[in-house]
Image (tube, rainbow, N blue to C red; front, side, top):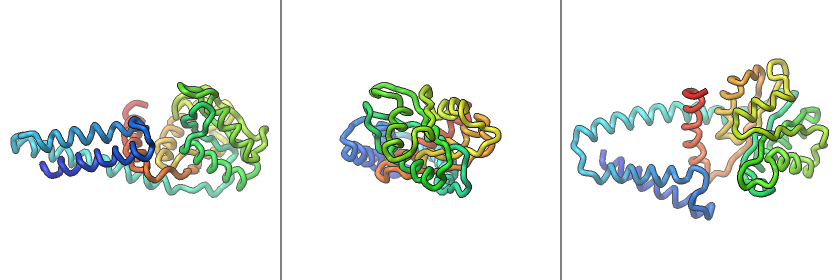
Length: 238
C-alpha cells in the first residue's frame, strides 16, 4: 500500500508541474488539486502507519476508485454524443473571458457552435454568461462579438448575460427557449457535456441534444477529474 501512495503522489505532483509549465501559471484551473493530492499521498506513503490502518485506507481507496471510474464512464460516454436533428435553439455555455479575450476553452465552444449554425442555418443561438472578475464585458457579449465576426447574423444571436454558473446558464436561457416544447442543443466542452445534460434535465429541458466541443488535450485529465466532483455535486446538492 505504501508503494501505491508513493507512486500516485509522485504522478500527481508531476502532472501539476506539467500543467504549471504548459500554462505558465502556478494556479491554473483546478491545478492545485494535483499538488495537494500528491502531497497527501506522499505523506501517507512515508508515514509509519500501522498495517491495520493501511488496510483500511486500501479499502477506502478501492471504494473511491470504483465510484470515480463509474462516474468517468458516464462522462466519457457523453463526450461522444452527436446532434443529428436540427434543433430550434442552441445554448452556448459561457466560460472565462480575460478582459475581452476569448479563452481557449470558450473559443472551442464557439467554433463548435459556429459549425452547428452553418450546418443548420435556421437555428437560433443563445450565448450565455455574465460578467465576472477580470472581465471587461459579459461573457455573452464577448461570445456574441466573436460569432458576428465569424459571419453569424446578429438577429440570430440572443444574449443571456446574468448567469454565473452552468445551472444559471440553463435556467436564465429559458427566457428565450421553450424548454418543454422546443428542441434545444447544448454546446460546451466535451468533458462538461454530461454534467450539463444532468442540470438541463433538472431545469426542465425535455428535448435536448448534446453538442460537445473538443478541449485542450494537456488539460483533459485535469478537466475530467474536476468534472467527477462536479457531477457528485449535481447529485448531492441540486
